[in-house]
Amino acid sequence: MDRRSVLKKTLTAGAAAGAATLAAPAFAQSKIEWRMVTTWPKNFPGLGVGAENLAKRINTMSGGRLTIKVYSGGELVPPLQALDAVISGAAEMSHGAAYYWQNKNVGLSFFTGVPYGMTSREHAAWVRYLGGQEIWDEIYDQFGVQGFLSGDTGTQAGGWFRKELKSLDDIKGLRFRTPGLGGQVWQKLGASVTNLPAGQIFQALQAGTLDAAEFVGPYNDLALGFYQIAKNYYFPSFIEPGLATEAVVSKSKFKALPADLQEIVRTACQAEYDQVASDMYANDPRALQTLVDKHGVKVHQFPDVILEAGAKASVEVLTAVRNSDNALAKKTAESFIAALNLLRTRAESTDTPYLRAREKFFTLK
Ligand code: CA
Figure 1 (cartoon, rainbow, N blue to C red):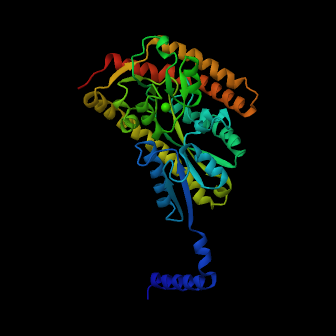
Figure 2 (spheres, protein in one colour; figure 1 turned 90 degrees about the vertical axis):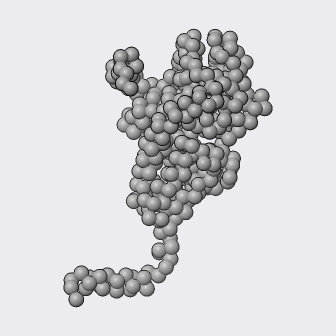
Figure 3 (cartoon, rainbow, N blue to C red; figure 1 turned 180 degrees about the horizontal axis):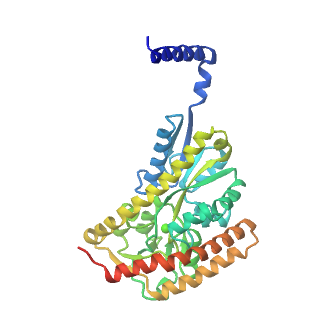
């Protein structure tokens, strides 16, 4: 018998003895099942698929010790009650967007996307390196949950409009679906704003209770079929220049996990954040081509008069949060604005000039 088989024999004997003395319960306890409720429709491209892939990643990385069962919006709880489900213990985890919960604390909006705020890269830099995550944790501590970035759409499309937008007058009274602080900006521009989850927007457009809607960008919006109702597609979204999704976990359930499973959840979120961003970047331009070539969608840039008024309204909205009595929202806004003013120096000296130069001078077919 060589050394290896002796070792093997010893280990097998040890394992058998261990199994006999420790018995089954210890093993059974190490299999943990979590429910993840989401704000997304089933098989929803980009964001919804990101939630499903996050679950698969955690299942695989943990070797099945932590398995996540995903529920699309409405399956276990209505989409916009996903966070409440985690707070109440009806689910251990949720996947959605922090700004859906701005009624709990307006500071949460900053962890999704902010009007005239950060692009995706800037946003991740703030959350990970410039103090964002710590404030986010402070806000969610009050609810017994913990948030992680879990995906990002990149700069979004501005929205779908039945009629072309020539001036600010065209916005007055427009019934527009758009959430978060961006919704407040459009409200200031004269629109009548509501938020609806992804799965209900098409119906509202079709029924005529909405005149216009924005959701994400070509990849998601093609799937939702908005082009069937409104043909004018405006770019870019000045209210959502970057938009992060979140995965939220129950803090007590998360803390009860062994350290390696905690790290798996954290790392899987980070990996899926990156994967979703690439998915959107790769598929948005293809979807836009389909929208234009097959569905006769007209692509427009917002006129400057709307971009400028949007910027002014954004300053007002962000200033109001910074000056509010809500200490954590104020702290969030202050941190965000300071980081934005740092990060924009990089964008304005490097990224923007490069993109301008490429657009102006470079062609290679
Ligand atoms: Ca949006």
